[in-house]
Amino acid sequence: MSFKVLMRVDAGPIAGYGHFMRSLALAQALRRKGHDVLFVSQALSDSLVAGLKRQKLTVRRLESGLPLREDALATSRMAVAESCRWIVMDGYSFDTEYQRLLKKGGSLLFCIDELADRRQLADIVLNQTHDAENLFTYNTEQGAVLLLGSRYALLREEFLRRGRAVHPPKPRNRNILITMGAGDRHNQAARVIEAIATVNQGRWRVKIVAGDVNPNERLLRRLIAGLNGSNELVGSNGNMPTLMTWADLAVSAGGSTCWEICFLGLPAILISTAANQRFIASSLHASGCALHLGRHEEVVIPQIAEAVSRLMEDPARRTTMSRRGREIVDGAGADRAVAAMEEFS
Image 1 (cartoon, one colour):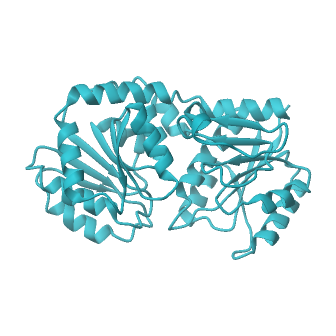
Image 2: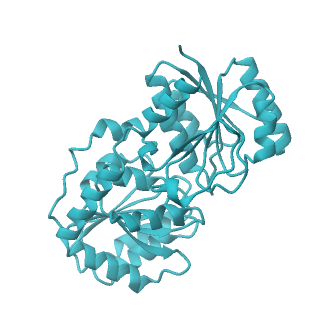
Image 3: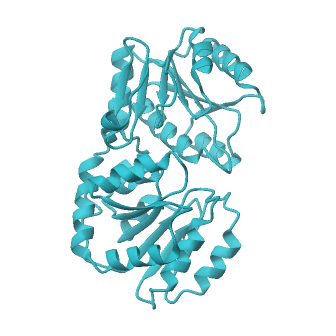
């Protein structure tokens, strides 16, 4: 039997883009199974709202700046008015008290989490970090269902449509993709370009993804112009599956993009740009599908240059990394999550 789901997520210029994208992946899977979805947010950029509307997904805005208690009560009232069986939350601010207020409305709660830093009142908790079942201990209500590990990685339909066979391991050592998050508030893409400039000598082609909210676009264009060879700055409207299948190596932040990278078998160098990313990046490093250099404030330009040069000159290692990534993420994570919701309901 079909049901309706309220997706509560915020995404702004500084943070939240990854939260939104994985919520969208779950929403797409829900709709594939015949369920209705309503997005509710205090803060979504106009471009994200437009994208939801293009996909015929409904969006409702909460009053901007609502305190958490009022936010929870307004969300709960909306869930009741819309007869939502589930409320899905994805965001660090949705604490235990927020969840308690939501539960008063009678909806079931689904929390997408990656920290395990609070008591969870949710009926289902999903943490897609690889090896999450061994890395995290959750404090939950009796009967709560835990969906832990990269077999629950939430991938959007644009990646699932691309398919796994399109990106076989390649012996080339030519193309590098840099993707350091939508806003890249620590300007890591610029540091990666500077590192590549010290060792490139025109051997490689570089594409840098810079989102609409990236404040460093002018600097990035200037740095790209200083590189030898044919290089390009790509906006957030770029086709990420196509870019990833083009690349032989990615240099990426350690966020949700990692699961897309794994699914398509793209070897990666990871730099943690937020505290929560260290779990993702270190677990993928341990698995052999990525090389984690560490936290952004500790990583130096010569370290990046050496890692890029070493991997670009080692196609055998990249082939092994590619195979391991595809073993870790099979693309069925969102469908498994929906199946758990249907069984719980």
